[in-house]
Image (cartoon, rainbow, N blue to C red):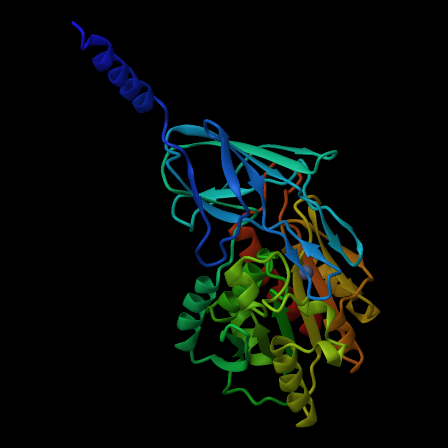
Length: 390
Ligand SMILES: [Zn+2]
């Protein structure tokens, strides 16, 4: 009888341990993964922050992208609390989260659903979201991720097309290639072809732009009759991923030298291989007597507005907005601000525009999907066909 208390307490302890759910495990050491410290403050309640990235000159703090894997979540409702969601952009406070922000989750990193249970506290810059998970592990991201591996798979397919040629423009700090995809019907003589240069993913956390560029490439290589005529009448030059180092490491904006690629096109003292490579290509294309008829730089704005924006200063492009409006599932607005890549081409008398895609909702309660982002690419090709030739 003397041994009884010594026996019962360890047994009770075992019972308590076995009833407590195993703690949620968070990791982000994969292509495009990124998260700050997260701790489980209560059972199934994780609290922490995203990773903040400070710009090379100290004037810039980009913080909004996150993409992590959570394990030991099956059959649990897990609450995630991200604090300190406030940064600096162009020396002014930068806040992108709202109650419209819906992160995405996936059990296979391919099929994504939105997390609808969200709340953003504007006074503390804290974003709280929760979801009940049926499987594990689960991957959770600010928005549909476009990792470097997705581009690698796309380029593998593109390589075998008779209509595409891939060249390398530059190597990054971390030895990744910047690829340029040239699509046309190489059998058709070049004289009358329009030359379109399209750039995506200068900013690493603007992933929908990568899907739009992929949508352009996929559609141009298809056998649809509009694709056949586009190949006969255009040279498409597409850089689908301008910032692979930033993408791989999950920065919100910068490359791995912590430079903002879209701000340095006119500043030679800040040159980076990604930008220099494309400038050199454009210079040699132009100095060989060729034209660039249009330059388009694809970005994303927030998860707030239900419209895309097309930003340009050349009023000859006004009707392009009207035409794109017909082919896109959300409205398009015209604005007149321009980034330094557009200024660079505009300075060479090349009509230039920035597209800022929304990653948000359609206005009817439904949120944009990867299919929608891909359809922006197809819509752009259809619109350019009509703009130049109908
Ligand atoms: Zn951008």
